[in-house]
Length: 548
Image 1: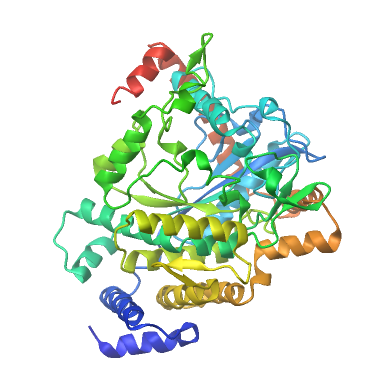
Image 2: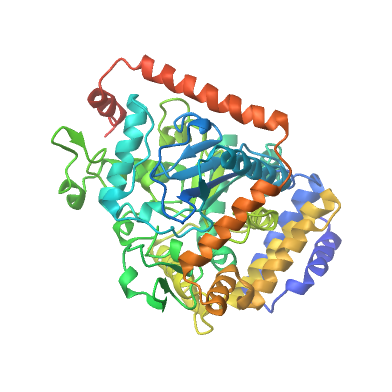
């Protein structure tokens, strides 16, 4: 392994370097040696990893009220359309891109889906923020509907159960998911670099789990850099909303918050605090997730499962299905028809990771931009290559504290993260992380012959050094300067985004035709699924949960 290459690497990102402890220097050297070995053996193996986006958006009318209309007919079947589906509510659209090798292709696809969707909306637009619009009480929020098939009805029952368990309002909080996998040729090369003699699927799964553990350790930085939900409309009465500070008559806020969406107000809620899913091996992860799906929970038993001939939830266990486990990051594999996600993981191992802690960027019409994607890609590669010890109870408690603290008070100058039991500032740890992420960015840029990935890291360094540059700070500053409520501000942004998609270059005929064809064919696929059902819903659910 050429020592000179490692020296050059350090000089290239010296602007991010920090004074490190002996242990810290040793870790950094191991990371850099691995990075140099990987890129020396195959210069472009870290570029071109597959990236996909899932972006949620509430449909609202022009007054900013939650839509009560059914799924737009021109979007086809929410059950089977590959690009446009729904999440919790009929009003909560979810846009899904295929996986692309470049951030530009992924972003273009997200924009195309937005543009096509706008063309199918009837006097409606898409909400611009993660925290919801002016919303009604729980019972008046419509659940998503997927037709009369057993699988479609099961999806609606699952959502009804979420409403009973957590409240329907909380389920209207929207976000962006970033799906990522490294190129196939990376894995045998990395196995050689590490000198590991292990089954290929097992090796890939172990390494992805290492990435996930490091993401959990350092993922607070995603909330800090990209969190954009420090305030919300008082019509949202989720858990602990009453304890929030009032910015004005219609707006709750926390002055130093980054992402209230990812706080105990939103998805990191207390109802799931007792669910511990191991990330130390794939077998343990699958075991724990299945156990949670099969373990009764007294509070949910009190709700009832089938009451008066109508399902309130799929079961009365800690989790109804795997997707109910709200984690900032998940190991994933594409499932076959009717296959459980845990069964897919056990079959062939982890295929990609899903990052779930991104707020919608209210300042971008598509809710995400290329700089965000580039940074996260480089950050995930760093999380993979860096040492990733297994997590014990103390580590998990520290991770939870850092996550919750950053979400609610991350920009407070007095806030301290905990690292191995010792306090550390956001700025100190953030700079250290970025000094390693920029090394990954440099290797990607060398292949692409530009500086786009390094530029994205430098933008994030500016936010770490200047918290007032963060999206959360910018949003609060705008609210204070304009005197607007959160609702008024987000509504104005939604209208500007609607205008943006109306004014940009129209979709190419081929793209529009592709979306229209998919919408029509999705309806045919849904009808075929409904026609193929040959057992009752009760029998279908009993069979689905037969492993419990």
